[in-house]
Amino acid sequence: MTATTFTVGNFKGGVGKTKITTMLAYDAAVLRNKKTLVIDLDPQANATTILARTGNIANIDYTITDCILDRHSNEGELNFKTNPLESDFSLNKIIYNINDNLDLIGCDTSFKNFSDFIRIYSHDQQKQVTFISDLIKPLKNDYEYIFIDVPPTISAFSDNAMAASDYSIIAFQTQDESLIGVNKYISYQNFMVERYNISLQVIAIVACMLEPDDDLDKTIYNEAKNLYGDVVTKTVVTYQKRIKKYSRQGIHLNKYKNGNYDQWDFKAHNCFNEILNEIEAREKFLRSEL
Image (tube, rainbow, N blue to C red; front, side):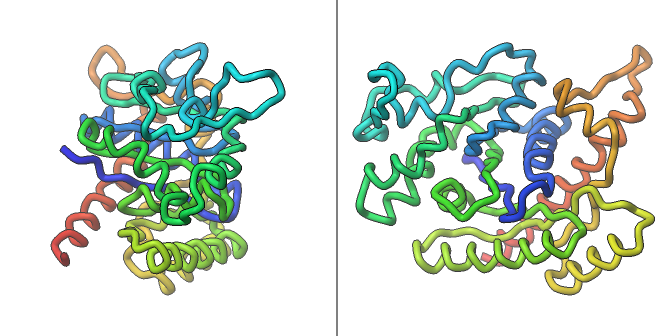
């Protein structure tokens, strides 16, 4: 078992990246029994908050920041670890179990210093962009899926996520600015592939929060289909109060005593399960082309 790794991104904020990351990971783990890991590389730590609530974890005391920072350094000083890849710090210390098949490596606001760390860590740009990839390499045999959440910026965060991933999932809202963000993301990804010789393909472009009856939303979705073809998923993530509720209460999938799922939970999760179907079918196709 070697994990297939996905980065969920867009350089436009507020397009549903974290929602897609956490829901796909949860459903891969719960509905498909896939051993799954979420790595939060966004200092805003929204994925960490949602999944901590999902797992009823009061505090995430250790995060990915602990891999690069010595938190026992003098107050007010940034004391970066010299070479975390050669230290005896155990990644297992920062892995939190959310449910039977779902784990989390969380983030916190201190991770905003990652870009500073990378510049000190190495003058070799190749090593700078592959730091996270090298860091998580020992974990890949423990999981089937790894999902990485990143901030909506061209930065050390996105560079490292791309270099650590097999595929990208691009989230977009059915708005002009968001669709333009898709094109920028793909262009930058192509630059990363060429510049650093990484293996990375777009496996899905997911329309998020589309209003089914809005003509403009339909028009922009169809424009995306015309531009990018079948990589744009047929399944779209429409606005649902239940999904919004998960951000506050944690993700759940309730079952009644008769074995039936709560209808609103089922509707929310079925959407992401269908997206997983499309991703798995496309991955099978892409692998057959090799």
